[in-house]
Amino acid sequence: MPRITPNLWFDTQGKEAAEFYVSIFPNSEITDVTYYGEAGPGPAGTVLTVNFSLDGRDFTAINGGPAFTFDEAISLLIECKDQAEVDYYWEKLTDGGQEAQCGWLKDKYGLSWQVCPEGMEAALNDPDPERANRGMKAMLGMVKIDIAALQAAADGD
Image (cartoon, rainbow, N blue to C red; front, side, top):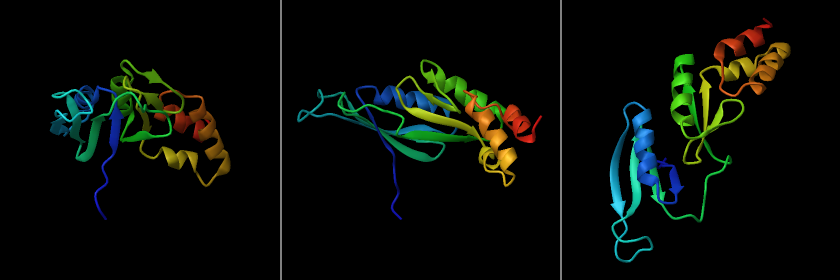
């Protein structure tokens, strides 16, 4: 299968956003920057695209102008190993952004993220329907996911 690279459309902040994301995720780097030439359509010498990787996963940011903006129809999921990771990514990505419900947030560039613990689906899809229902009700009342509270709710505590 050919490699698929998410391409994120920004007005003019593609490089700034890539630098922000690279600063948050381990083993990440900007790998290439291209610039508009005299043919445009952006001003010559300004950033056109930024290729970057977040912990080995490739992305491209394009400065395509204000024609398109992010909405919740696309989001990036961060599956965190524990509460400390949930807290870390939540704090970093909500800085200048907006919190939402059920582990969702928008960063300062308007990109939606889901910051969720590993195994959260197990609590929400438990074979015991009562346990799953309690877990789902707890999650629906959360902004940032609290693993201990989610597990306690699922367990009926």
